[in-house]
Image (cartoon, rainbow, N blue to C red; front, side, top):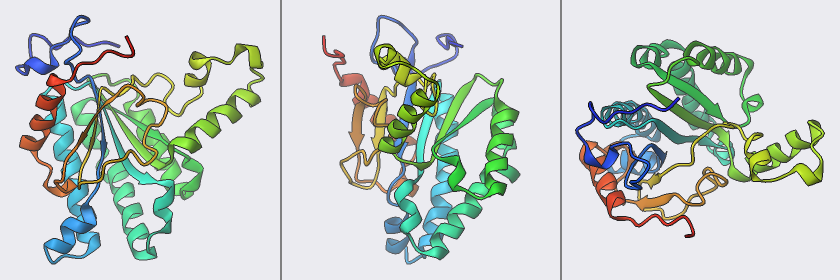
Length: 247
């Protein structure tokens, strides 16, 4: 469902218009730098992840205020399982908190929750929390919040191909549209803007299929310190980009 926010939204870069490409309808974020931020503050990595989680909620509210229709975040990659047991366990605890105790965060804001990734890699408890959260928010259309969990861009494409084969789709019928229908979030609009914090300048397998024409914005600011001012700075830079889509 498309929502026109022209009357309510005071931010000119987000006025909905088919003629304007300076519109951030979908912003995707690689939330990097929690541990480095914590170490510079003399805190543990766990505290960095805790603050990063709190900042994710703040960013969500700021995006809502600016009329963003889709927000996707890279929360836990397929490679993150290699981190220490203490860190992984804490990240799983945060995930349980977000999907369970704090589900009202999404419900109160009328935000739909979508999880992208290999859900079977999580415990049965977390899988149920994911299913319940998606079901509880499926009819909301103010904004869709996509969380990439146990996610890798190449894995998503591999799983899409497997799904096509299971569905019996013939080779002659395989095109971009057919593949898109078998991705984790089939009706996901391609991100207009990808933001990565902490100074890294790569996508690291984040939404590999969907970001081919996304504008990229890299900042040295660590994720826990990425505030409202930094968000607006990214949006202002986006306004200056010429989006030609190969034309």
